[in-house]
Length: 503
Image 1 (tube, rainbow, N blue to C red):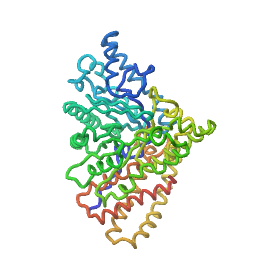
Image 2: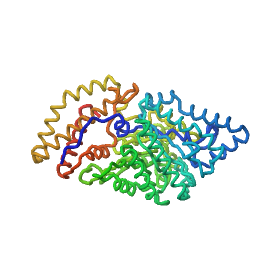
Image 3: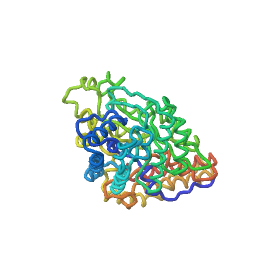
Image 4: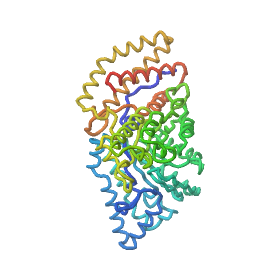
């Protein structure tokens, strides 16, 4: 086995593979100013948007309607919002929904938006790009969540209290349009070097088996990989995490003759419906430590399995069903909600590659338990400890790690030397060096100016499984035994760094 190339992680790598502590920001670019009033943000299909555009054009004309919509897009997420997200909530990423009409008139041809309604979106994508750049300047990554496929009817209740999702499968021409939309996003991210884009989500919370999405996935993955094989693609688990993990693992196999986009599985975790209705708050909280158990047999053996997978918790909240809360005293609500939120944050940080709270700048959500600002202010949702460390502390910890590196390295190699052959020991050593350096680079990325912004905190390698896949996929020849020794060393190097800095 040739030793995997270990060039330092780039800014793109850190944005995309670090642990993502984030939030959903609502369908800013999928709805116009009408949503700023009293509309409920439950149904994310395009029907209501089209109705409102037509109504506005009839009463105000095209130019004024476009001006109103553009003003809404420009002001929906302000610089002050981004500062709050980065410095108070300590978020390093957001999840941003877009629809086919977000990309302008060309992508509306053959859809009900064709004609004057599509002209309202002439400048929408440019506004998105401007927001993406502002996010970059603040050190915030963006998951572009492509949600609305023309011809698809998908209504859902974010609260999880009503399970009313209905899927209508699009025509072949609409699937082709959706494919072209994803290709456009990937091209834009690549051509404009958008390091801040941490990935593209190509399906939302829907049963991907209903409309044979797997066939469409294959087509999209092929195109995305041919444009930019380094850009992660996110797929929904569709309510069946095990099946989605297996699908992703089948796509993430290596080695391959050409680069393949890494596939991340998005899952949502709500505790307001189904079996949770009959549970008291403490019983619900006790469920959290067993969440994402499906990963146990699918991770930590990348080389042996010849594939890798990571999970992203794309939506969660601090809400429980009213029936659950009725089992507790009102005076206990604050402490129970804090325990609930903190337990989720701890579990996602230990098992997932990232998470996004629901939500920020969203309308019509049912109470404070769904709102990031209120949950952060109450101390119910807090960032992982490494994201809250002052930069002065980060600098001291980096110096401490450098000072202890050789001693810790020697101890690790000494322990393994009796268990491995000389060749395996060499690859373990190379892996340890790579893992330690990578962890150090991620942790010091903001402090060293690799990641823009001047916020607090360091970063960890959140998508470690796919990071190992990326590292080892760069070698041309894989000997499984030596590769396993290398992987073991890399994982130990990462762990040893974290122990030194105390995270």
